[in-house]
Image 1: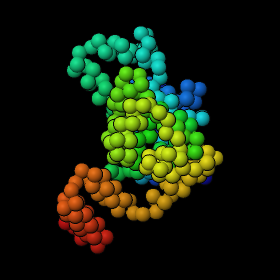
Image 2: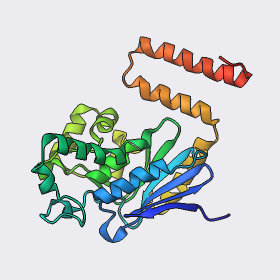
Image 3: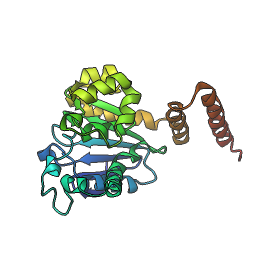
Amino acid sequence: MPDPTVLLERDGVRLTADDSVATVTLCNPAKRNAQSPALWRALVEAGRLLPGSVRVVVLRGEGQSFSAGLDRQAFTPEGFDGEPSFIDLARGSDKQLDATIAEYQEAFTWWRRSDIVTIAAVQGHAIGAGFQLALACDLRVCADDAQFAMRETSLGLVPDLGGTKPLVDLVGYARALEICATGRFVHGSEAERLGLANLVVPVAELDASVHDLAAALLAAPRDAVIETKALLRGAVDRHYEEQRPAERAAQARRLRDLAGVGE
C-alpha cells in the first residue's frame, strides 16, 4: 500500500491522509507533546486542509504520552519566541484577552464537524489541554496506561479550551466537578467505566483497535452517518418531543436520496 500523503508538518503537528482516513499526529514526543499557541494554530490549519474524501480523522500522539498539556513555558515572563506570554496577556484589555482565548479554542472546535467522525487514540498522559483535546473528538480509544487529568484548577485556572461541555455530557455534572476541582488522575479502566473511553485496550493493540473502529465507521454510507451524527448531537439539547420530528425529517431526506427523488 502507498504511504499516506503528508499534507502538513509544522509546530509539533503532522497531518496525513489516505483516501477516507486522515491522521493528525502530535509529533513532539521529547516534550510529551506539550501544547503551545503555535501548535494550536497548526491544528486549526490541519482542519482546514482535510480533503473532501476524508470521513474519519484519527488524532494520536507520538511517544509514550498523548499530550502532557500546556507547555509550562507559557507561564514564564519570556513565554514562547514571537508569542505574548500568558503574563502579558493577563495585562491586556478584557477584549484582547477574550479574543486571544477564542483563537486558542479554534484548535478544539472542528473535531466534531458533521461531515467527519473523529477518534482520539490516547496512550499515557492526557493532561489539561491534552485531556480537552481528547474530549474534543467524537470517540476515544484508550490504551490501558492512559491517564486523564484536568489540572487547570490546581494551577488557579479553569479548563477553557472547550472541554467542560463534553466532559459534563459524558460523566455528569457531579463527577465532572470532582475530576476538575481535585485535578486527580482518571486511569484507563475508570475512564471506560465513566464513559470517557469508548474502548480500553493494551498499549500494543491501540493502533490496530483504532484501525478496526475506523473501518467499521466507513462501512456505512457516508450520508447516513452524517445524518445520524447530527441527530445524536442535537438530542443532547432537545426534548423528546422535539427529537421525534428531527428524526422524521432526517429519515425523509435519506429515503428521498435512496429513491433518487428530489425534495
